[in-house]
Image (cartoon, rainbow, N blue to C red; front, side, top):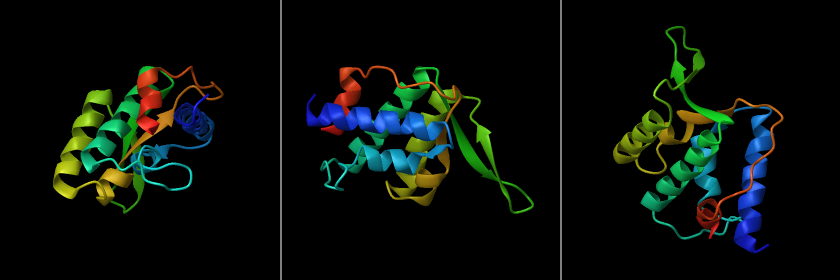
Length: 136
Protein backbone atom coordinates (compact mmCIF):
# COMPACT_ATOMS: atom_id res chain seq x y z
CA UNK A 1 0.00 0.00 0.00
CA UNK A 2 1.49 3.37 -1.00
CA UNK A 3 1.58 6.44 1.23
CA UNK A 4 -1.46 8.12 -0.38
CA UNK A 5 -3.51 4.96 -0.10
CA UNK A 6 -2.50 4.49 3.54
CA UNK A 7 -3.30 8.13 4.35
CA UNK A 8 -6.69 7.86 2.63
CA UNK A 9 -7.54 4.68 4.53
CA UNK A 10 -6.37 6.18 7.83
CA UNK A 11 -8.49 9.31 7.31
CA UNK A 12 -11.65 7.50 6.26
CA UNK A 13 -11.27 4.94 9.07
CA UNK A 14 -10.82 7.85 11.50
CA UNK A 15 -13.99 9.52 10.20
CA UNK A 16 -15.91 6.29 10.63
CA UNK A 17 -14.56 5.77 14.16
CA UNK A 18 -15.11 9.40 15.16
CA UNK A 19 -18.56 9.24 13.60
CA UNK A 20 -19.53 6.66 16.21
CA UNK A 21 -18.96 9.38 18.83
CA UNK A 22 -19.68 12.80 17.34
CA UNK A 23 -20.20 14.84 14.19
CA UNK A 24 -17.25 16.11 12.14
CA UNK A 25 -17.09 19.75 11.09
CA UNK A 26 -16.34 20.54 7.46
CA UNK A 27 -13.27 22.54 8.52
CA UNK A 28 -11.72 19.36 9.89
CA UNK A 29 -12.30 17.64 6.55
CA UNK A 30 -10.76 20.62 4.74
CA UNK A 31 -7.63 20.14 6.84
CA UNK A 32 -7.52 16.42 6.13
CA UNK A 33 -7.34 16.92 2.36
CA UNK A 34 -4.91 19.85 2.68
CA UNK A 35 -1.90 18.33 4.47
CA UNK A 36 -0.40 15.04 5.55
CA UNK A 37 -0.19 13.65 9.09
CA UNK A 38 2.95 15.77 9.71
CA UNK A 39 1.11 18.92 8.61
CA UNK A 40 3.11 19.08 5.38
CA UNK A 41 0.92 20.83 2.83
CA UNK A 42 -0.22 19.02 -0.30
CA UNK A 43 0.22 22.47 -1.92
CA UNK A 44 -3.28 22.68 -3.33
CA UNK A 45 -5.06 25.89 -4.20
CA UNK A 46 -7.92 26.97 -1.96
CA UNK A 47 -10.34 26.01 -4.73
CA UNK A 48 -8.83 22.52 -4.98
CA UNK A 49 -8.96 22.04 -1.21
CA UNK A 50 -12.66 22.94 -1.22
CA UNK A 51 -13.36 20.65 -4.17
CA UNK A 52 -11.46 17.75 -2.58
CA UNK A 53 -13.23 18.19 0.77
CA UNK A 54 -16.62 18.22 -0.97
CA UNK A 55 -15.61 15.09 -2.91
CA UNK A 56 -14.75 13.31 0.34
CA UNK A 57 -18.05 14.38 1.93
CA UNK A 58 -19.88 13.22 -1.21
CA UNK A 59 -18.23 9.79 -0.93
CA UNK A 60 -19.15 9.43 2.75
CA UNK A 61 -22.75 10.54 2.30
CA UNK A 62 -23.22 8.52 -0.90
CA UNK A 63 -22.17 5.42 1.02
CA UNK A 64 -25.39 5.83 3.01
CA UNK A 65 -23.44 5.88 6.26
CA UNK A 66 -23.38 9.67 6.84
CA UNK A 67 -25.61 12.69 6.36
CA UNK A 68 -24.88 16.41 6.15
CA UNK A 69 -26.13 19.21 8.35
CA UNK A 70 -25.58 22.69 9.70
CA UNK A 71 -25.29 24.29 13.10
CA UNK A 72 -27.98 26.93 13.54
CA UNK A 73 -28.26 29.64 16.18
CA UNK A 74 -31.49 29.84 18.17
CA UNK A 75 -33.16 32.92 19.65
CA UNK A 76 -32.07 31.91 23.16
CA UNK A 77 -28.41 32.08 22.11
CA UNK A 78 -27.95 28.32 22.01
CA UNK A 79 -27.13 26.26 18.95
CA UNK A 80 -28.85 23.30 17.37
CA UNK A 81 -27.56 20.82 14.78
CA UNK A 82 -29.99 20.46 11.87
CA UNK A 83 -29.78 17.92 9.01
CA UNK A 84 -29.90 19.55 5.57
CA UNK A 85 -33.15 18.60 3.86
CA UNK A 86 -31.53 19.26 0.47
CA UNK A 87 -28.76 16.76 1.20
CA UNK A 88 -25.49 16.87 -0.71
CA UNK A 89 -26.64 19.40 -3.26
CA UNK A 90 -27.61 21.90 -0.57
CA UNK A 91 -24.38 21.17 1.32
CA UNK A 92 -22.27 21.73 -1.81
CA UNK A 93 -24.09 24.96 -2.72
CA UNK A 94 -23.82 26.33 0.84
CA UNK A 95 -20.10 25.50 1.01
CA UNK A 96 -19.41 27.14 -2.34
CA UNK A 97 -21.43 30.25 -1.41
CA UNK A 98 -19.62 30.64 1.92
CA UNK A 99 -16.25 30.07 0.20
CA UNK A 100 -17.05 32.79 -2.36
CA UNK A 101 -17.90 35.26 0.43
CA UNK A 102 -15.35 34.37 3.13
CA UNK A 103 -12.60 32.32 1.51
CA UNK A 104 -11.17 28.99 2.63
CA UNK A 105 -10.53 30.12 6.21
CA UNK A 106 -13.95 31.66 6.79
CA UNK A 107 -15.47 30.73 10.14
CA UNK A 108 -18.77 29.76 8.58
CA UNK A 109 -17.10 27.36 6.16
CA UNK A 110 -15.15 25.73 8.96
CA UNK A 111 -17.85 25.24 11.62
CA UNK A 112 -21.23 25.89 10.00
CA UNK A 113 -21.53 22.61 8.08
CA UNK A 114 -20.77 19.08 9.23
CA UNK A 115 -21.25 15.38 8.57
CA UNK A 116 -22.70 12.92 11.02
CA UNK A 117 -22.65 9.15 10.89
CA UNK A 118 -26.03 7.46 10.87
CA UNK A 119 -24.88 3.85 10.87
CA UNK A 120 -23.09 3.63 14.22
CA UNK A 121 -20.57 0.79 14.37
CA UNK A 122 -20.32 0.40 10.59
CA UNK A 123 -16.79 0.14 9.23
CA UNK A 124 -15.43 2.05 6.25
CA UNK A 125 -15.89 0.55 2.78
CA UNK A 126 -13.00 -0.05 0.37
CA UNK A 127 -11.84 3.23 -1.13
CA UNK A 128 -12.08 3.97 -4.84
CA UNK A 129 -9.11 5.50 -6.63
CA UNK A 130 -10.59 9.00 -6.82
CA UNK A 131 -10.73 9.15 -3.00
CA UNK A 132 -7.14 7.90 -2.63
CA UNK A 133 -6.09 10.58 -5.12
CA UNK A 134 -7.33 13.31 -2.75
CA UNK A 135 -4.34 12.59 -0.50
CA UNK A 136 -1.53 13.02 -3.03
